[in-house]
Length: 532
Image 1: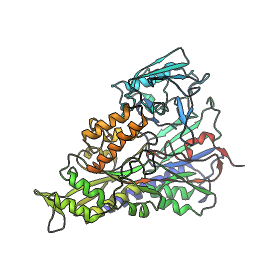
Image 2: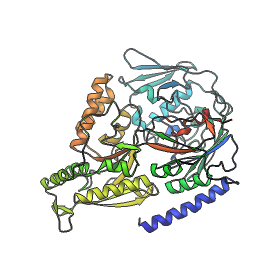
Image 3: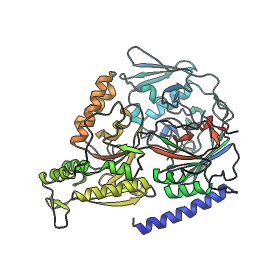
Image 4: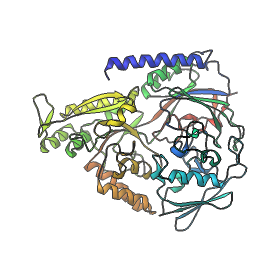
């Protein structure tokens, strides 16, 4: 897409967004105002919307789904706490059995009681191969799940899986509704019913998702009675609407958030994350799939410059999916920026500069396209910086903007400026990202990365109950990514939010890539209270 068409699309999006803002807020406020909204309502701007609102198809699998609860939940410090379970699970000595005692007196928002049957239904449905859940492999460890009476659920595992309890933040669906319709296409996918603090009141795709407080919520009815997530994919438009008073809060790129730093009545929240930006290097591409090209790009890129210029310091260099501050990060796998060494790798591999400076090998020109999501300023800036660094090494990368509908069919052969990352256990993100058998499975293993040593290490890390053995397995994964990087990891990004300062109780967690929807200062909006 050309710069002119991008600007035209942005202008159209801005006009549409402002029209929606006027309709949503009959009395737009000042820059620091609330747009005439009541003290018990909030509207926040997010960048992405889910494909479904059914947990059976993957919605809310990492918690904070608003409509639903899991057996467990994460607190502000990312420690597990009981939710629909009355306590943390009882684990057998061999690590193969997890027993959950359920909270009594919980109802779904339609008034029907919650019970063990709903838990069993949810997990068995997700594990059913006929269910279109892209994250099913995350539950591969489950051998069986059964109810013991109405208030106890027992999971039996195939092997000891250290982080299993973290998987049980997965939202629970009502069997009496979801079990009576097609799990993949039924009304429940867009009109869900759950036990959570909020009830869905409307979903205008591409525009907004609206909620109202659940008066039946077992944790007590929230003080914020109406909560709306405005879906605004363009970063600049989101900032404009926040400035205009159409929004009470929004996620923004660091450089745009800076513009609100001195605004009275607003606060900025910065969340540390596992969220990375990476370039997929498809194995099926003659250039991007070449190991020498991959290794050269890995050290030609100037990650520190990206952190400083693109992120305004709100992030860290990324050398793989594991952040450098994590206990699971493998020291010694950091890659220093070394353009001379990158050129030497390419020279030794037979990639020789042509007359125009772009390298050629066996008649193949060192060139390939790099796609990024239209309207995502951070991805655009990362893509442009990456292409600039690559050009200095003699690799010609053409950046292109598009929607996921345009990008997804091209992922097998074209590079993509992608994002990912999940807090907690290293299995959570790496297995889906790197396992060769998941290549081509939706957005899993987008690069079609195929490395037998990595496949084995991923299985070893997943199946071992010994932390030292698991650390050794994930060390192997990270060292193999140095030898043959199927992705060029660029940065880990801090998430920055600007919110009107009219509530108490706001905080942030350590966040995954899926930011704004389940994360952000509104991860616990049900606990907010209006300032007096």
